[in-house]
Length: 162
Image 1: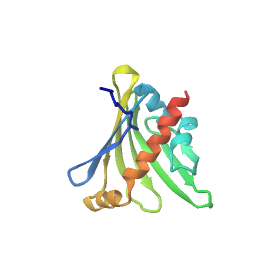
Image 2: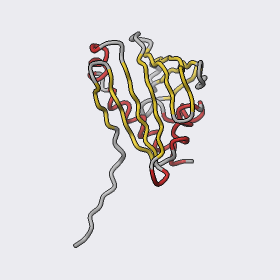
Image 3: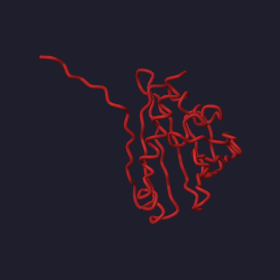
């Protein structure tokens, strides 16, 4: 009998917690410190953030406790979407920041936890807490799951490059 083991692409899970929060979880084939570095170093961040075919320009990117960010995801047709937030905590294994789409005010509080797993792998868990049940419902309806999945696929590629 032949073993038909297949390798599947990593999957991000999205689990609603209560009325206002979603937990997103993804495993990566890289140590936690490396995945966190991709979230805190501008040169890495711009390589994976945003949908395929877009570019990211940073107006501000201070990924330290007390810092802030503002970036624009630009499309090939010249359009763009601006995001901003503040870093409340940036320490090894953890980032806490607000995140806001400027065209739809209402900051989301995000807690990112980076955990090492066996074999040089890691897990990223993101707890996103929205301002209301309606805001959480709207984010789910907007297709945030697919957007996050695409970003993480791009992050997989950046991590594999070295």
